[in-house]
Image (cartoon, rainbow, N blue to C red; front, side, top):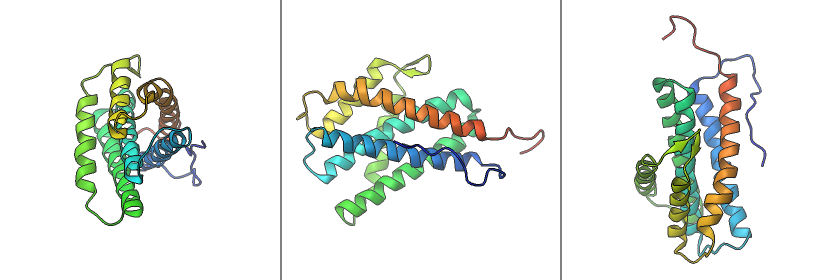
Length: 190
């Protein structure tokens, strides 16, 4: 999968919010591509709704991972300015896709509630050496398995041992490449 981390207009400084938008675009692409690949590999999705709910689980996982990565790379104010628009754009993209695939409806409140629930649960798990703990990865796999109704024998292992590490590698590369392009704030700038 091709990840975009370069700008056409290289002369203009990019805000942290713009960087978050690029990470959100790439994170959506990662989540959607991964779930579609799982579908084509034979994991049992019963409906478009179930497929999109699985993408939602991947989005929640990627939001928390991006937040943890940002925590190590940005000060608290910059981190908030990065994570909020990232999450907001990913939720908006999820809702747009739900409307497109499932028809008109009020999808945002449920999406926000479930993503917030997942982020709260993920906060209880440890990261070791900038990597999520195995219990966190198992929890992620269990959430995906819950959406799929327990009908896929190997989904927890697939998510925890194959999909999550690959996604984290792509996300880390994306964030590192983008943050490396950001100019440090000038002295005295607010």
